Length: 264
Image (cartoon, rainbow, N blue to C red; front, side, top):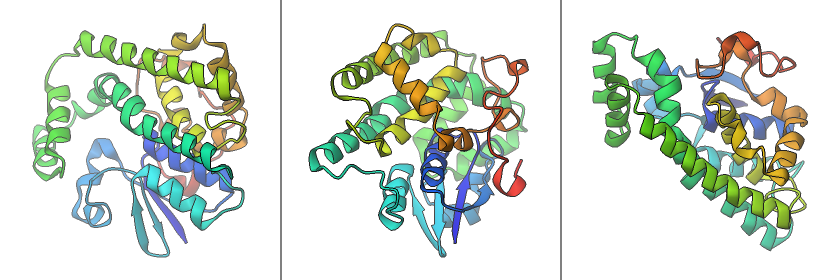
């Protein structure tokens, strides 16, 4: 029995859904509404004391942190493998997974907060927001949420996120051009699964132009999007947070699979 506690437009949760679909595994959806602070409830914190999504529960045992969850899935369900057989390629895979955790995700997070999360959370009652801040296990993260909600959008924050993303994409372009076709070399792996949601988030934040003159990266993105698991893992329009990309354009993934469990 696999249960995934997640929100639909969380990049870390998407990373795990992508892995689950690549494995062809069945799983039960347990939606945790981040904008309603459901990740701060005592029940959820008992599963994940970090107060973040996703959490995978396998036969009653919780596994937390998306990178560790994906390694756990690949170890527990080894077919098809998502780690290269070659030790050097596995090391390269882990470098890219760590790079997504340490560089790509933190670079984009401030823009996501300002342009996607702020419009939703700012409409909540003040007492609800204050309760979240009191309950959050990460004081720095809670303070950042509070600052994002209460202050006007800082354009410098958006510019800084874009500049950091540009530098990170340079590194991806060089790696794919010299050692591709995938981030770990010849084998599609957990590295590609880790980085793909960040590309999607950058598209939603109107940063897709950053790779228009990076041919190796552009080719990688096209091949990633052709994968059936990719199209199933990413949320359809109804399950997206609002953002700079015009929501009247319709679903970004019109062929996406139905939402497991029918969660909203």
